[in-house]
Image 1: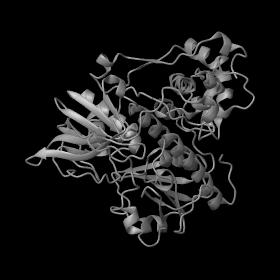
Image 2: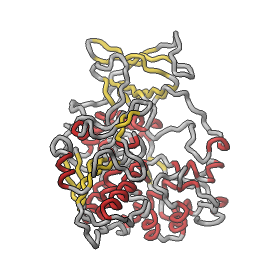
Image 3: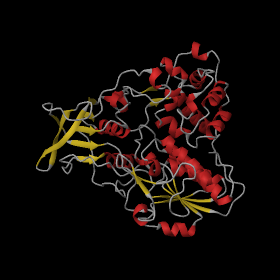
Image 4: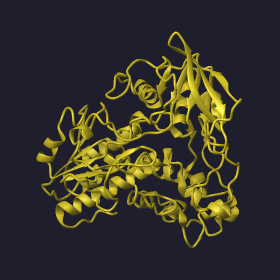
Length: 484
């Protein structure tokens, strides 16, 4: 819990950023790390709150034991802190960078708008552990003779692979792209998380016996039926990658794109890879010297904003159909749950113009090329208000309104008619499996992550991968020591 009176004596601080004028000139991370002593002071603010909502179920999806490792950091015991953190989270250096930190929303000190800097401390623990050599392969001492295939190497697939490999199974992880990581590598921009952190984990997992098969599109290059025949279990962690259909007239104009092909392309450029990619457009999409409009108000839209600025966009406008939220939430009404309030991402703070309560009516153009985006204001029911139409100049527009499920041209196509799917109220198609055993309607076939629950956070994917690994281990061996 840190220092008992720390929250009374120490002000909240988080890591600072490079100035926007500097950071938009590169694609590297721009957070300025805090010193060990500064991190320890922030850990000391963790109070003896009685019921620590921060570590679940309202706070952390993986149930990080936050008060415990805050106390260990405060007492300068970094090795025990990373051991504790790893007991619930395989990849704290990922979540410490890209998680929106629902734990901080649930912190008791958030009632005073000064929550413990949990995310900052978590990242510091992981980075310090690498610096001190505490993160090493942990290969199994006993091998079970069981073979498990995992389809998809995003956070769910990687977490499951590591857990099952440490349990002694022969784990084979299949990835459609040329490198592991899924949308951790190809969706999240490098300025939010550089990819050497994924590479380090891949090397650790190889040392634990996990075999990576990259450039293999399961369902096309290798049949699912073959994996089911060769393996004792198959876990499908294909993610949610199909863009949600916008239904906006003019979407066929040159210059209008879904968000993910744009982000994948730029991540491949930064990683010095060929931008040709399975499932994504391969024609170059660049924002240099252009007026850019981003349709959508979520993280993917924000990533498009930051990427466009770094490519040299003249102007970036972000359209959100939701009303502008209040600056502060009513704590007594929503705490310890995630609150709807005005939030400004680092990318938006780099100069984006944000339009709220605005609907995108049409993409307009000349000779088949985008020239503008026709918009209008909407009422509280998101219905257009007559007479409020206006046009925003645009040379490039990105649609970032979410995802409707996994790609349907590989695994789902092969298992069509055998795999039970569910379509939710927003039209997303997910593979049906519960969150206890993660079994699908196909024998020996499990599923976890966004492909099961729909688009979500990295931390939820890690949780599902860990839980699915436990379920598979128990099914294969009759019992398991893997944590849930």
